[in-house]
Image 1 (tube, rainbow, N blue to C red):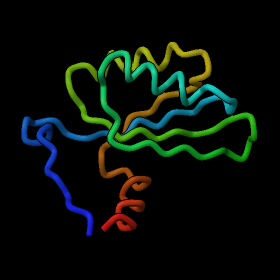
Image 2: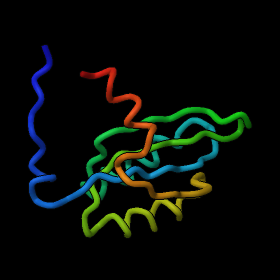
Image 3: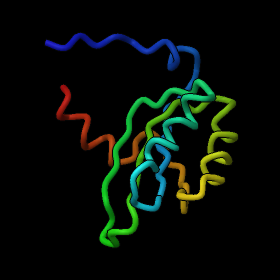
Length: 104
């Protein structure tokens, strides 16, 4: 049985959001994105990556808390060479909602 621990951040008023990234599909792209978040001590609650029909591209979804630093993180993501597009969705985005039932 998996014990669920309450997150302190939602109690502090931070909502979750999903960032959807279109990226070039090659070795090291995920590392660059994760390192960007790590250098700024910005936690990712969930990561999902899938290839697109075009084998040169992939899509990454990041589940993160929306705090005052998020806008700057999005700007930094957009500056990465291999990040082609960044879209922002609410936490109810279906990609993580569908996965959630596997972990209950």
